[in-house]
Length: 257
Image (tube, rainbow, N blue to C red; front, side, top):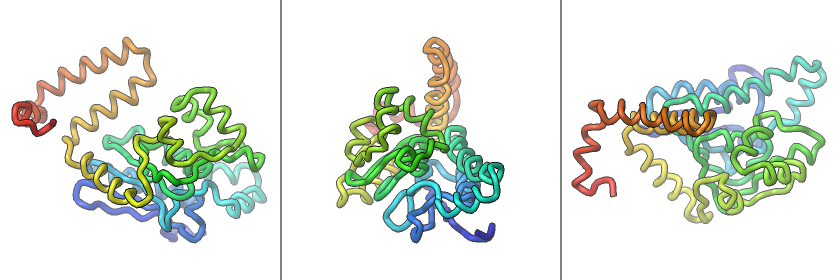
């Protein structure tokens, strides 16, 4: 695949950034180039918008790694595989570091790496009939996009190991029940539901959103006492700043109800 091929499209629509995995003919399978473009698109949009939403073209999120590319890289030796996993890993990893929330809007298939990308996003919203799985084990493979580490942190050891080792599919509705998604939408409500949720995030104060996201991500890596100390320091800094003034003034108007 040429480095000039565009396999991820991105644009800003006001305060909302849109990223589309754009290989519909391959159900948005992940390649070396897709991972690189995804990371670049996330970094570029983060400085210009309040929220980013990631979707897949053609009615599917992503079926995971591109098997044709895997076969080609394997033939070149183990080191040839490294860019595939490193590029995608960096794209997933950067999400937690961005100052804006990143939302995965998941429909159709989200398998293997696609499922791992969903886990890496700050928030996921899903179509109830979406088909999700870490199905690496079904093909004699192991997760390579963070699933062995993120899934247990999201759903606990029992569910994570049971799911990864069996390769059983989950529906979007089940994913929401497990806490893997914030909300599941009926198929006929999905597009409107995603748009309304993302629009609501885009209307929030971007400074507050960034600080809340940072507190949650940093706090999850720290003991509770340290996390509470971080929250105390952050809220004092935030409430004392000019950016919080308008929000405080709106308390009595019912705007935030």
